[in-house]
Amino acid sequence: MKDHLQIKNIYQRYEQGQLVLENIDFSIVKNEFVAILGPSGCGKTTLLKIVAGFLVADQGAVYVNGEKVIGTNPDRIMVFQDFSQLFPWKTVLDNVIFALQAKNIGKTFAERKRLARYYLEKVELSDAFNYYPHQLSGGMKQRVALARTLAADPEIMLMDEPFGSLDNQTRSTLQNLLLDIWQEARKTVLFVTHDVTEAVVLADRIVVMTKNPGRVKEIIHNKLARPRNRMNPQFVRLTEIISEY
Image 1: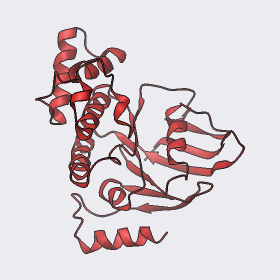
Image 2: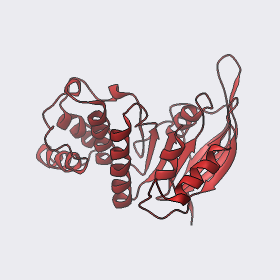
Image 3: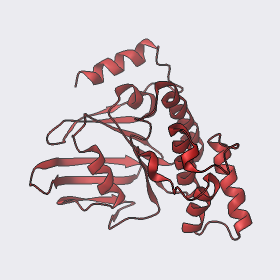
């Protein structure tokens, strides 16, 4: 299968000259769900920002469908851990409508409103259309961010520990919701996490990174059948193996 996203020999330094990423090199095929797993400080978020086009690598390049990434593009959308990524002055519905307007999706406001409601219903927020972000829990804010991303219909979803600040129950619920949506929408997903269990629950492949500087230590193919049972001995064993890296 042809590569959708290629990350080729990426090197990156901090302003002080310290090397944060060293020779990051791997590819992702279309519709694949790949997790980048590593400790804090290993450059996971920096790598995601390079893929998104927010940063330019000191060395190496990123390619989408064979074309070099230069700057940001609405076909690559990043979802952050930060709960403040929504526009605080807009309602939940208007936050999603904004994404549709930005991508020029829908011919009329009425059509965009219908589509926004559709995506919010997908993430189980049909009762929160007229809420403002300050009225939402952290989990609800991440649902809105996910709905807004889906509404913009990107080819690639870049997710920077989007559930990292949530309680365990909410995190598990949103992981399952994300998988349901991904299996239906068939997007290419690059998902950053420091949680081994989360990586095993979600990903087709897991890119394990080292710390200081961040390097690719191992790429693990996750062949566990979906849906994945966290209590399954094979699941437990895989998390143990990955934890030993």
